[in-house]
Image 1 (cartoon, rainbow, N blue to C red):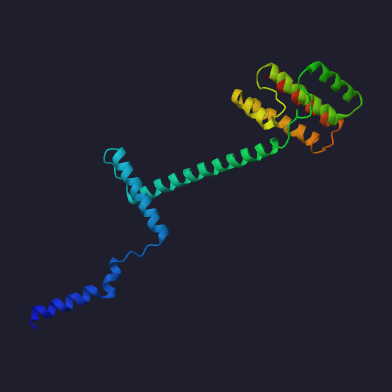
Image 2: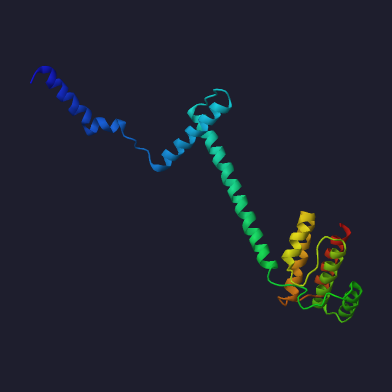
Length: 207
């Protein structure tokens, strides 16, 4: 073996040794690789959008961090909105407030008479019920919703929401209290009833 061949063989051994190859191995963990990939992608976008602008590595890290934080906030807000909306729909889809009532031939005046009787007897649970039913018919007359026996309060909520999100939020609170007293047997005293009446009146006054 010539001297050149000997040097060549020795060089190959060195290049193939673990100590030498360690310098060329990617020792990053999976998170570091993902981070570097995202950073490289963001920097390429910045370079493309801003005519050759190339931020430093530290600035790139900061930009990626800000973007990820914003995305996380968006995801959290979206999750909260979806959970809240699901919870609300579940609450108001349980019952149909007019299911047991014959709509044809029933006037608001008749419900107002029933309301007066319930108030005279201090039957505040029934009074809350009639207050809410009267409100539904008044909203029907104003064409904010269409009263139907098969509809739930969630259906009415959605109809009002298409007209005004703020009014829909107010209606939701009135509907939840109505359902708690009518179907959940929630007890209502005079003070609670007067508070509910004020909320109904405030809802009507802002229409």
